Length: 111
Length: 116
Image (cartoon, rainbow over all chains, first blue to last red):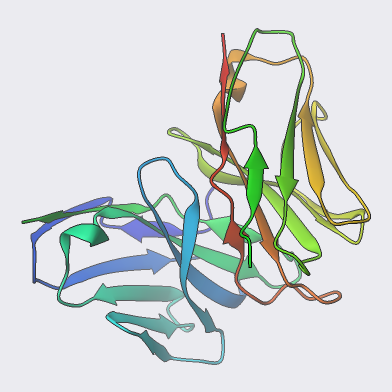
């Protein structure tokens, strides 16, 4: 089964609103990463948060990590139509040296 | 700096045939990973190569194989194709220096394989 479970599976909001996506995982990790994918194309790395970090910012993105709950959230503030995409969390599992992806959240920004 | 390049972008093959996909990583990156993406199973890890050696392998049958060359370019081969192998195959490179892969991965645009 997938290491990461993402919630919600789909999210539709109005332009300018904030979007929050959540990711839960099962085993101990070295880091957790968020990626964006536009309609069947390659993945674009957004942000990486290490297991000893709790929060990280990058532009309009804010990521939190709670290792005690094995969960992370991605917040996109002031959303734009160009943010419409699928968002995936990926965990680097300790000892495994491979990224394990969640099923993704499909985000739609309505103009 | 050029990104990760995957060729070909699209491919149509018949059941039973074999296929080879190519991935050129970002210059200086020595780690190349392959993923299969399907609507039903999502993104699944296939294998990772570092310094021409397979370091990690996902849960795929032996029909899926790969290799890495001395210039870090990688190829993935699927033999005896099945309809279920239709997928987007993504390659990612990362600047892994030695035994630890602790940085972000940079993905190519993928190869869309359709098996008919």
